[in-house]
Length: 201
Image 1 (cartoon, rainbow, N blue to C red):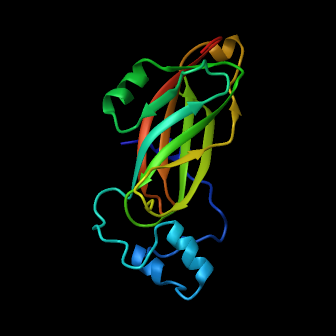
Image 2: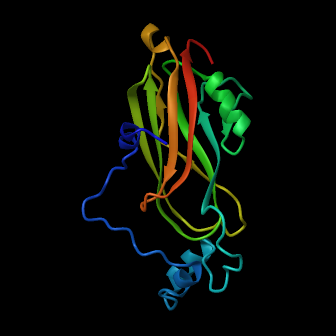
Image 3: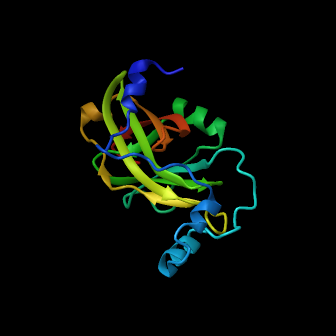
């Protein structure tokens, strides 16, 4: 169980006056405004069609597949990707932190699948700590999605950031806790990983 102060780190930014809509099934969404042709085309592009929901809504609504760090400065052929579904990889990345080059532009990329239902207001959050002290918090909106019409995963690229630089930044390991959560507070994924900064990748 998380300590209360850790949960405070993950309190999402609230928009005053915003209230999440009532949960509806895929078929209910498909029937809404059925006479509006442009809306019907848009819903069809999301796989929201009358009678399209044939599988029962069991298991998690969302499965986070990978977390990737992308940078134009990465050596050719090198990829920094973490398989969130592989427990051994998650254990390993805490013991053997990912190395990020200091002072370079990079961005976080997340891949996820919507298994059933419409998900609304889904966001990725991460809290970075060094020596137990919070040094960064990121909150990025993933958006609202339905299951992909072909069952494929969605990929979301976040805004570029620049990694810290300098001798002080290079000392120590940064511990990260990542979470994917929706407007209703439902947590779809929650995992820990680590990185360190170095002069080279």
